Image 1 (cartoon, rainbow, N blue to C red):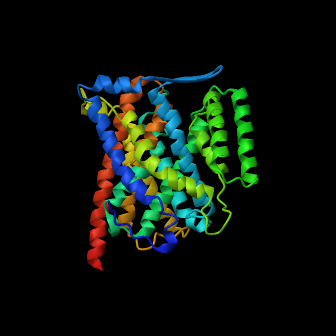
Image 2: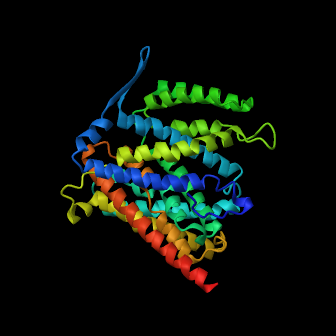
Image 3: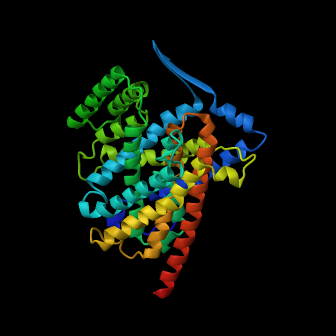
Length: 400
């Protein structure tokens, strides 16, 4: 399948994974649709039973017993966060975020796109302490989903705009990682954290010695994941910690580094297996009795309004301010109408919003509200963002 991305040579490194993300975004949509169909069909009992299947691993006195849903959310999503960590490290050291000038615009846009949705959500849910736990849900952007929608427009979109969305989403993911670490961690175990610190020290020793074989990092990573899982910190953060220790330097100039090798090999697995499985496991929501009254309840309304239009207002507003003040330059060849379309696409929270929501609301009573809000906000953002970009790109092409 061809998505029509024409990328100049100097940008190929920054967009090396766009094709995987674009195609993966379409698979992600299909998985979410399959979850909705399954949870609203006579097979709903089978869908729920599949996710509740108990899975256990025991090594001596150490035992990890969880339903399949939590293995997906705590285990497989650690692989996703590992890949995100690799991307963040590469972009910060060698890519489109490696200089202040390059990073300024997407960083400010991402900040605006996190602050405004949070304010929208808090405003709508003010006075409900339990609901306020979900303030961070609409602050996230789904890379695969948003890039997948952008890819449908092919070569109509300038490469600089694709870079902008990509960098914005990566910084957004970094912000989500910080939020999870700071606000969704409780009941810490000092012993487990101490053991995890020992594992991290081993990782950095491997990096310092220039070890370029993946096996030692994988073994240390599994040890750290188990320790973090038992510590009270969310286990997926172990993936980011391990990723930051993977060496980006290579033994020969023409030879890819271990980080680049792992990033290239993991992308298809994450795009076509990990994220679709997460979407299938978490997007299922019963539509029985669905009404406007349910959609405008404070939690789903706060999430949906935060994603759409909150994210768009935050991203576009911060971008305009940065350009107007001379802090950064507008992406080359992109119009303000196209930037508005990309800002709206930033409201596709989906994977990350669902993930943060699972951490924010342990009570299953809120599960349906969470999913309704995320699906409504993400679908509205995807639809309007696509239309804005298609119309604005057509008008720009006709004016040439």
